Structure formats: C-alpha cells, structure tokens
Image 1 (cartoon, rainbow, N blue to C red):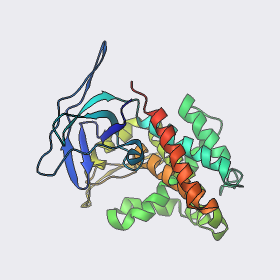
Image 2 (cartoon, one colour):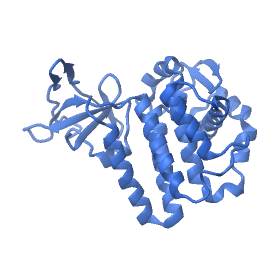
Image 3 (tube, rainbow, N blue to C red):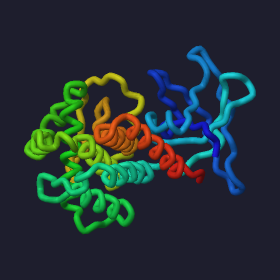
Length: 290
C-alpha cells in the first residue's frame, strides 16, 4: 500500500486548514481500482497528502490511497480502503483495549452503575461484531454519559438548548465520572467513553447518515431548529446547521488521543510516543485496500 492517504467526506471533499478541496474519486472495477483524475495545485497551494501518522490526527469519513503526480504539487487517488463507520469504531476499541492492558487498574475501574471499564469494552466489541450483546443496557448507559460529557464541553460553541437538556438528563453520571478519585485514570476513562461513542453510531446508521453530511464542513454555526430522536443509546438531534454529535471517526481519533495521554501520564512521553507508533501500525492494518 502507498504511504500517502487522503481523508474526505463521502462526496470527495477534503477539509484542511479551513479550505475544502474536491478530489476525483477512484472507481472499483472488476479487475481492480481505476484511479481518479489528477488534482493539481491551485491558489491555495499544493494538494495535501497525509502519511499514516498525520492521518491518525485527521481521520475522516472516507480514506483513500493517493499517489503524487508527475507535476509538482499534484496527486490523484488510486484506491479506496476498508475504512468505514464500523472500522473507525473497531479502531477506537483497539486503542482502548491496548491501553487498558498497559495502565494498572484501569480495566477494573468501576463505572457509576457498578460495571468496569474493561467489561464495557468487551461488551462494545461484542455488539460491534454481532449486533447483540449480553450487556447492551449498560452499553447504552455509558454511551449516553459519553454523549452528555461531549455536549457539555461543546455547549457554549453550539448554543443548542437540546444539548443542555441532554447533558442535564445524564448529569448525575457525568458528575460521578468527574470525581477526583478518577484523577489518575482520567485519560483511560475518556478513551473508553470515546470508543463507546464510536460504537453508538454504528448502532443507529439510519440516524447517523443524516447528520454525517453536516459535520466536516462546519467551523462556526448558527442555532437552527432540530428534530430530536431518543434512542436507548442517547439522544440524536437531527437537522440544524451544526454537528449534533461526533461521528465515529472523530470519536476514534479522540479514543486514540486519550489512550496516548493515558500512556504518557503513566510513564512519560517516551511511552506515549511508543503508543502512538503502535496506533499508527494498527491504523494501517485497518486501512487494507478493498
């Protein structure tokens, strides 16, 4: 596989530093991939290609394999990858499972309702792979907590009363997870929350798809009327001008980042960098060409 990638939305738009560049998408044919057309440099500069390490911090809805063109600053997309909502959620779980093995006591840390971080990740993996699980009720609870915590952090930027209500509805659980006793495990805890949030979107694809199109292009939002859909895994707000949740690839990026932070908190920057190296290798495995 090439060492160059481009992350886009489903329509081939790449968002980078406030600029959107449209790529010609490759086409899957019977005998392999037909590359897209060459995209040339423009007034915004050369096209932006990512290596796997850069991609880790800039994951998108779709990930394509790219190759530079003969003309400087130009490139084309040559193949799709297996990246998807489900793969993003799987990668998030990969990162969390790895860090729970590293950070002492993290897997056995108790949730507000009596379960453990390790058990909820096992349940999330089971759900992701089979669509069912023995602990779906707890998985839904943790998902709602994850959504409420994210909404609380973003509420001033979004300004949507629906999110304030959603955060208040899960306020007790959010406050419990903010207890000082969690201090040494905060990063591992937040990695678990992000991973479960990623799985949440795989559980309700018919709602996720309606909101995914709105996410990557936004920078600043005006409040607009929304429809709210309650599910066992938390509230989805459908419509409006801004993003109403973090898509699975954003949650996966957060899970990876918080996992690295947990490793750094435990043993310092060298161990954190080693965790990043592991994540990059795992991400490349998840990006197998279709």
